[in-house]
Image (cartoon, rainbow, N blue to C red; front, top):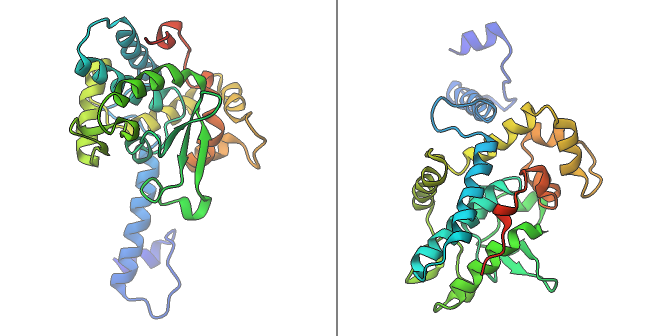
Length: 272
């Protein structure tokens, strides 16, 4: 294998002191896996795929059902609110890392400002992502289109013990402050997407759908400019998309949800 690597060329061989064949094979395998993961982000899958437009339709359907619900069953309403919140966070704005969304907690990583808007603030140890050491703590205001769902969800949860500090996607009604574990979150999310879109979709698939939509859109330049207008960047959003720099995309994109969704009054109706 090593003879083939040296003969054919095209492989990046790490310069280390006296590398062993095993160490070099491990290095090559890591490079191949990294390239494969990057390529998969831009490929539509035969199964388990949803377009960005279909994701928007699922959000509008979920929020519309929530608005139309007039029953007095608290569990049903809470379930509708949780579905609407998940779809809004992952389709109304450029999808953030699923770990960030899964761990969102009222009063800690999700806070209300003096103006009545909501913001994500990842300054706690439990909320920080692995890239924090490179980018620093993250804070960003959320668009006003998220206010109706978040206001109603917070009001619903705050009436329960511990609801003021509840995780949006808690795993048990008896422990609102404990967010779902990754495996439970994935199962719940797939079932939720099946309910509203007819397809079982993993949370991270929506990030791939967003990138595919950006790259395939005929109006890509206008969309990119709109997403990027919040503050002058040192490089284009197209470059950030190509590099999968979600930190940069998210900083600009959260302020411009109109670039991510065809806004619909039905999807943003006031909740009471």
